[in-house]
Structures are given as structure tokens and as C-alpha cells.
Image (tube, rainbow over all chains, first blue to last red; front, side):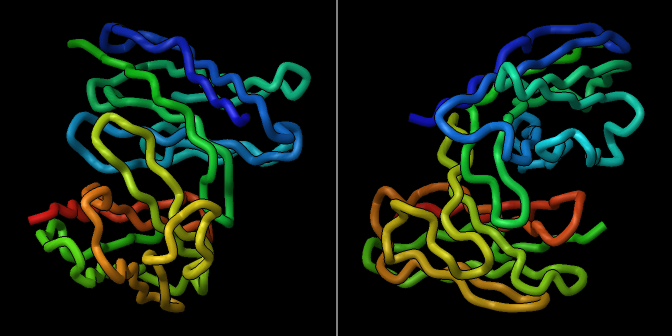
Length: 117
Length: 107
């Protein structure tokens, strides 16, 4: 059974930092490109970042470039999103998802990040 | 960045109706177009990838078509459980942009 589970969300102050984790199982994690996608309250989906299987190619949305860092540990089937200099507009549910060219097929349940001013 | 524009933003239809949602890309994305269904409080679910390939387990009443910049998602006979928001997404190049969503309600 495939499982993708995000953790680490919560309330943080404007300008603060927060780290999200994602634990995956049930598929070949070490061969998979992984992503973070976020959804602000009542809004649509926004792709945030992707990382290829070997961490050679990491891409970011312009809205988070320079502030967020995406990494992975294939030995632990885990992903990490370090979020610095957080803004109110970073408030969203953050989803971890597998995929690339053929869409995102496995998603976590999402974790809420709230940035307060 | 490639912009994705969906239409309509919302629609209401009856059980059994044929429903079509369109998605337009700001430049050619060949066949790298995916469709997702999202219900309130849930993660998105991949319905169709590569324009027209049905994800495993997705009912055959869902279909997709198009190429280049213009794409459609069709539900051939609407069911009550199809009430949701639908998003297109291009996976041609990063950033993997999504459309703004189409909220589908059942009359």
C-alpha cells in the first residue's frame, strides 16, 4: 500500500522558519521524482518545488526561490522542505506528491502551514 | 512560465449529462497535460495524464483529448460523486503550472 505522509506544519511568525518532512512507502522512492504542491485557503493548486531521484535537479517556483530548500534522503525514503523568511502568502496546505511528466500520482494528505503577522 | 487557463470556472449539471471542461496553455505543451479531481478537504487525485491516458481505477466515463495548446476533459455521463473541483496541469516544463480550477456542482 502506498503511503505519503507529511509532517512538521504549524503556526509560525512572519519572517520565521519551518521545516516540513514527507515520509513515503509502498513504491520505489529512490527512483521517483518528488514534488511539493501547496494550496492557499480557498485557492487553487500551486506547484512549489521538485527534486529528481538523485537530487541532481531541483527546481523551485519563483515565489519561493531563495527562501525554500528541498532535499531528500533515499536511504530513509524521506523528503524535507526547509522554509525560511516566511511570508503571509506562504500560508497554505502543503502536499508532497510523486511524479513529473506523467502527472502526480501519489499524494499525501497535506499539512497546514500558517504564517501569522 | 506557461500559463494554464481553464473554462468555465464553475458549472452546474444534472446526473447523466455530458460535461466538458477546457484548458488552454499559453504555449505548446505537446501532450504533457494532466487532469486532477479534488474534493473538499482532500488531496487532488490524478484522473488523466498525458492528455488522454486514464489513471488506473478511474471510471471510463472520464476522457481527455487535445494537443499543443487546447485540451478538454469530458465526463460522458455525470454521476453524483463527480461533484468536485477539476484542475488541469502542464508537466511539459517547470514550473508545473495548474489551471485555476473548475468547480463542478450537481443540480
